[in-house]
Length: 400
Image (cartoon, rainbow, N blue to C red; front, side, top):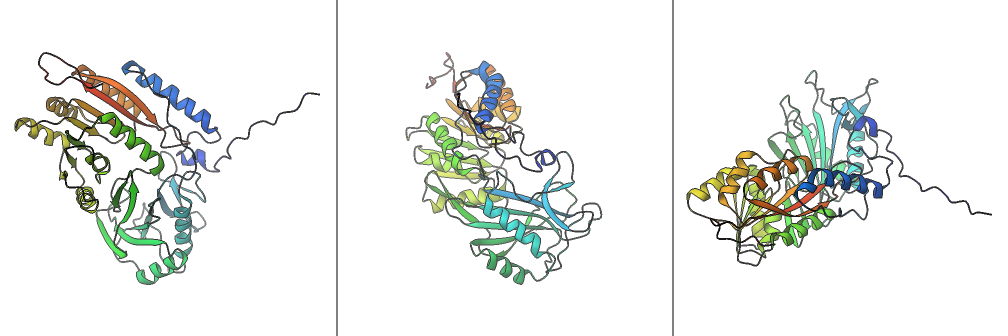
């Protein structure tokens, strides 16, 4: 008699995934998700070179170290927290998310349950009435430091000391609590003003041997395990031999640049966000890195200035937002003429667009390595190496 085989079990689907819209691959086995993403990467990027197999995640659950929840009330007046329904500003209550850090989710649910006893009203976008708009929790996975950011419509938070004391009694591992004031009618989560209620106003995490200070508004990759693989691949592609001058464009808090500094002669980081630049400078000092400098400003304009001063760079790391880079930035980088460009992208479609520009202006795509940072979603990160073509006008031969 033939043995009856059990069908493989699919992951349990999140109850609100259709309304949330955050996860496109609910119920799809992880190996199948990788196959779908690989097919998409090949379709978008194979004209520029061979797309290597995606580096997948060992554990595709609860990987996000940054958890955001928006607060509201349901039709019965009960306080709810969760995410906006896809394409709307209707709040979908979320009790548990399969990709967000568990401890951070527990903290958010605890805050929700505390609001009534502290008589704190949730913010109403239509009327502008109420106080609490969002909660943002960030956890350093390697340090276990936790930051809680209370996003409010007014800097006046009733019984703030008692509220923080009660919250820390439930979660003594919380390292800092920050009040972020967002008093504008905007779709942006965070406002510009931060008021520290407890702790130092930031947390630290370790990545690729360096320690990084993370403030409420700093950009920091949400999947630290895969980020280690992403950055190690980027550094390897850069081919550093301790003699290079390196530009870290869109540098954020200096993560890539500081990791690269130990293998380069000099690192110059440029970032528009002044708070991130402040953190990058502190991160360099705390890691005792003396060959990295950070500047606040537009990276494209900075490189234009270098060209006008007759300065050069050997390698440019660029890690733009999902919308990709701009033609202005790419033009400035081409004028600067680095021998190698390491492009880190979270948007394969905009990467393809930018590769089209760069390959028309003297660069060749040498390596394309996707890294899955976002399981259960359609998104994927990619590291791409481009080298400058050798011409009679070029004194630098592209290093393969």
